[in-house]
Length: 299
Image (cartoon, rainbow, N blue to C red):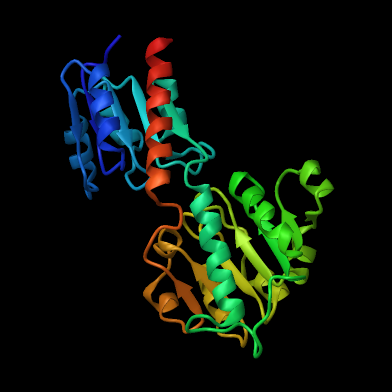
């Protein structure tokens, strides 16, 4: 089986070798766009009569787009599909129309963990512009909370345990295996009160903290976010940042959801680069996207 045409509707960041591999599965070749369409009409135009489309997390394939592309049989997300609600693709609607939707997982996690550890050490030791406390401090015995103990959260825990940090987690499901390793589950309020440093690892646009929770969190704390979208209410976060000793650390993907006013806060440390993007990430992403397509064709 071959698709009539495959369209990479935006910059999916697939390797050149992966694009060449895709040619094998398309009668009329592959249209590979390397930008991000700003208008819905442009997305529809690019897809045209194609049976297969690949898309990054930045472009919306909503119900309106899918309705106007009646030949679609397959949508490959070159990004994580945590759950249908947080996806940039109208997953349920597509499946109701007989369109297979496949996402990928676990491709950028090592880089994210390296970013968190690196930025955290820089802040604790004052190796950059900022220093968390009056004296440099170590990760040893720091009380670190992880929100969302999926793949990235687990890798972060694995990284921090050898430093002797006290690790807590909050998640919608208990992880007994990790509790046995010494990562303690706490209800949210107690988690916020006890943790000195909190790292968010949640599905896109999952909001967990509002003004009440930031009050509980208090002063002298650090928040780290590498999540897509904001996992908390921005105005409450901005107010919290103004308190002495509070810092926020964001990578390039997470900072996109912040307003200019928040980005201007002195205690906000942000990078323009995505923490999870590297040569190795790109290769893992490409391999997983191709694997999904092969499995669809073989079945």
